[in-house]
Image (cartoon, rainbow, N blue to C red; front, side):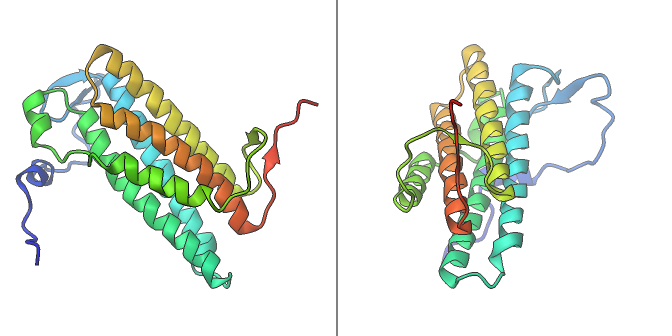
Length: 213
């Protein structure tokens, strides 16, 4: 049986004392992981801050999903699909926390001691995309966000993901960002797009397609 003892990397975060307010940020600066202080409007802070925002939207979407459909009298197969999506969202949230922590770290020695992004994380997302996409009708037009409240919220989450990607790409132009992080965030937005379609499929609601008229 695997040991339940904390790894040295997990202790880097678990050993931190969590304080609700410190007053140290009243002058517009914040502490990065490792202790250095920077302006709250630096690109690094924008990058991990937007990933934090994305994580919050993922949480909201997951709870909407399970509240609406996880315990209803829906067909058991459909209910199970929503529970699978919920589990995927929760796993993604944990991964995003790792990513935002890494983005909040500029000191290379501290970075090495932190929990790292699994190199297979993007492949797992791709596998989920392929599985979901195989159940969907072929797409022949651009999709307009909407169709249901849940699907619309997933599109909001997707667009926040795209913004997180833009902020992280911009950070990468100034400072080196791990390639696997950039790849994961990019793939996540693709996943959210197919999930938005899949949700409407499960809800038996129509997609809204763009029209030139």
